[in-house]
Image: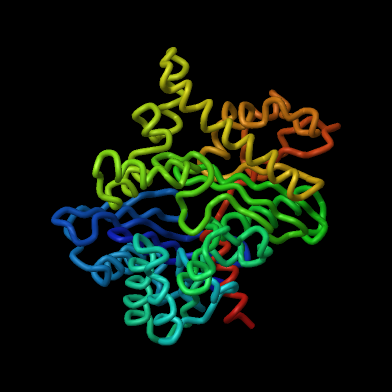
Length: 398
């Protein structure tokens, strides 16, 4: 067997893990441990042949969850002791201004990630816990942190600077950082290959559309603007997040109704977006209800697609010329209806969707625009774990 990277994505109460061949992207096993620290948890392990193993029970700690994952590998193969494990790759949501590249983890890096917790209080603590546990369980293997924000550190100041007081920017790091960077980077490279172009000679608008959604303007292979900002709340309408709203909404609701700021922030993150518009954050359910004539679902779908269209137009203006618009992630890869509606009316910009290609099978990177389109429209499945594995190998490989 070749070299492998164990990719770990630790959340507040969950642990995703996947063993990846960083060269081919092949995955001999991986899974998810949910409800860590709660009385009833679940481990779902998927084997290379598609077989699944489920273990119901309590996983009181992350260490116990990771040990259970290692045991699942032992029982269902391949054992982590029998593969050439060259690194453990850790997804870290926020790297601030410091981390623009994958980074070998040491005590100083752990301390720096901890200092960034105020910028990502819902994510970085879980990421840190995963790093802590994995360093203890795999002490002889290199650990590499890969940051969601890193791909966007190429944005120029004009794109990342907010027009706020200097003290906010200088002392409190208030600026645009962007997220989903690992996905955007992977997809931008794959899109350039599909077009037969060098990434450094390619301009793209990449649309990562899932329960979380973001758009990125990629000029010559690097990010020059992105829709998410200081936090993942800004930008496109999402499953439960509002996306762009007037910044005065917080103050207005606090003054008029006395609502605590934390409650308003929670509502904008967890009770808004598609869920706030029609009661459902799953886009498949939204489309199903819309087909039945549900007016709220139709409005939710239209608002979702309208916001995407606005960002495509804005990033076309930013880039000046665009080689392709690229859809990825759960909705982007699986919803022909969204892809068609989001780009409807952009024909004057050279952007069009071929109906037969759009509704046909998407088994890999696929062109869904007419052959004579000035701007290609692509669907490129994302693979963040493979990208993390590749970046980890770039640091520790031969």
